[in-house]
Each structure stands twice: as C-alpha cells, then as structure tokens.
Image (tube, rainbow, N blue to C red):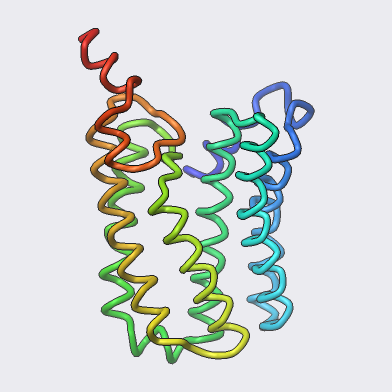
Length: 210
C-alpha cells in the first residue's frame, strides 16, 4: 500500500514524460522488482544475482548523474529512495531463499540491524507520509557495504568481517536517520549527516519562524 502510494505521488497526471536521465536509472530499480521476484520463485540464483548487480549499479549512477548534471529534484530523491527500498527488499527475499542457512545462523544479528530500520521507516511515513531521502554520507557508505556483501555472498559465499561491518554501519546509519526525522519537522532531501543538519539553514529558519 505504501509503495503504491509512493508511486502515485511520484507520477501524477503528467506521467513519465518529465523524468530526467537520472530518474530513469532510479525508475529501473522500481520496475526491476517483479523480475527479481520471478527469478527468486524460479530459483534462478545466477540470473537473480546479475540483475541485482545491475540494480545496485544504477543506484551508484543516478545520484552522480543528478549532481553532475545539476538535475536533482525532490521527486528524483523520492524515486531514488523508493528504488533503494525495493532493491533491498528483493535482496533480502533472495537471501532468505538462496542463503537460508546463513540467514538462520545469523538471524539475531540481522534482526538487531533490521528492526530499527523498520522503525525508522514507520516514523518517516507517520511524520512525512513518505520515506526519507536524507541521502547522508553514512547512508551511502552503509548502502555500499550492504551491496558489496550481499552480491559477494550470492556470487562467492560469506565474508564475515564484511558482514559485521555492514551490520554496524546499518545500525549507525539508521540511528542517524531517526535522529534526523526528529530534527526536521518537514520532509527535506539531501542532508549530508547529523553534523550538517544541526547547521542546516532550512531547519534553523523554520525553527525561527515558529
């Protein structure tokens, strides 16, 4: 339901015609979700992993394109975040199917990292009516570690130091996101991190006006 609402918000009556090139890379991750799920159902591990790699690659491309071409927008940030969430969801389902033993062996640690993420999502939708798009440095670093670990696990097998690093970064990033949700009364995009948020004119000016 939240996904459908997000998509309708991102694509009103004007549809897809106003999407820029960076948005299309983000949109690919949204549209790739059914294909990834079908490959999981068919137990096509190799194909799933390669298409998941493509999705993670588009995540690395869209932000850089938007910044370099100066075409970033609120809609683009939301679309990027939605694509990230759906890609993560597909990756987790894939791990449950293809690496079930690993998941069961480390379930407690995975839940310690994942439950705060669900809390952060719930807080964001309750306060803003949509997912955050803070795109902090810590979030980018966490996503990088996450993508590398998941892909390496699916292609070659687990690397445990990378797993622990990914979990630690995920927890820190989620705690920072939750802090930012409490700091910003209104939805904003592209906050570099908690340090920058405390000095953000958008937040300070809003606070002064109230």
